Image 1 (spheres, rainbow over the protein chains, first blue to last red):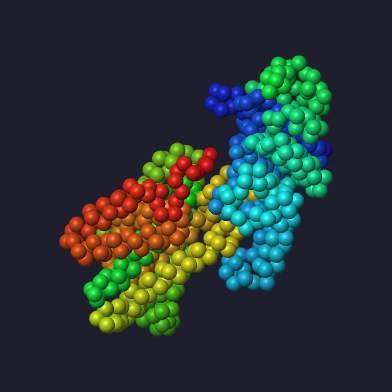
Image 2 (tube, chains in turn red, orange):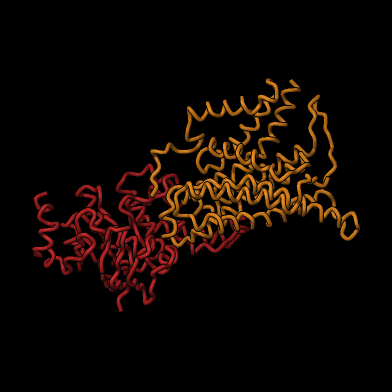
Length: 256
Length: 307
């Protein structure tokens, strides 16, 4: 049984058909890509699955349960983590706090613990901190832990967002353009990080990307979305040579 | 000079009412991007609940059913009223604001005004048009410190207010709910993705804001024992000004701005005829906002990244 299965998902914004009859099946540990020109509906697909929008039609089955209509926090608790195209960090909180809040459901001490520093709080705080540091270290940003996130370089902010998503212990991780705005060196590192994340935690990864070189190198399966519809799906080799994809998307991109 | 210090004491007391109410405005705004315009009326409801609780406790004590010292009656009144008023706040959030979470902000603002009117007129219908007196809980003692007259009530009001502000600060810094609240004030879209139930945090924010408003209501009732159903309107608006002046969602900002408002009002009245007090005081605040439209601790709008 696939970890995440989407059947006939359709959504409209007013009269605009944003996503039409979208299907997907992701197995545990897979790395999958979603490509398509600007405005194709890629981020909308993410928002529909993560519960920010509710699909008008169709099923989204995560770990055997239909999650359509669930509130975003429940979907997240069921093991779906995510990063955003435009970073959504909490500007004036520290890096460590980001990764701590991501472990919200693990914090069980209440008011008394918080105000009086009970042994339970100390124990939990230590565990949470340790986990936070190990993730930040993996992302190579542990030396920023006590800094306000807005003061970090852009590439480091992306890594913080990734660490935050991983701290929720997802079974599947959605990455919305994880290398947007990165230079070739950072891009190379990010590819390494994504592979490492998959190998270490065994999470499935579903990513939106504009840089085809990266998608082709990283993903096992790729979908191409144009005007809300999947026009091609397959292994990188097939996508690269698919005339429909080239027409809709690759033609322009290869020249660049 | 003694006259000056006398007014400092008065301003501290006056400012603590504003600060306590402003905190509720500020917290709700930072988390849900809406101004709860019913908040002034929740302050009024909190004061009335305080009267009810205090009356019951005082009657029980005077009839000899239980014997409680004055300070314990006060503590119990505050705690029980906070608890009860927090449900008023959560009810307002659940019924009035939650259905409008994705609606245009103007709809939420109108709803707030409506809820305010319902609370005022509802109170009028239940309690009648006669003013309610806050029962005397503690004996007033006046100290003469070098010509400055300080009552024990004034000291108590300022100290209790500061205590609650400090407790709120600790709550926001140290608990997971507080951390979620701070995060929501920066970007609320990412918060539920951390497994944080937004509705719980929203209800909690309203509960805390209302509980603080009820403390302010009780303290106000102790200082100025006559209450009426419309007492929350002007106070609410002025505390709203303090919340704006403090900066979006800043606890420290709302506190300082509340006290600043108290100081400006009292000192304007010290120099000018008291009929001109609000005119001059709020002209000064308008002038501050011209130069600092996002308040003391808020960020300029352009720096915000919101959905």
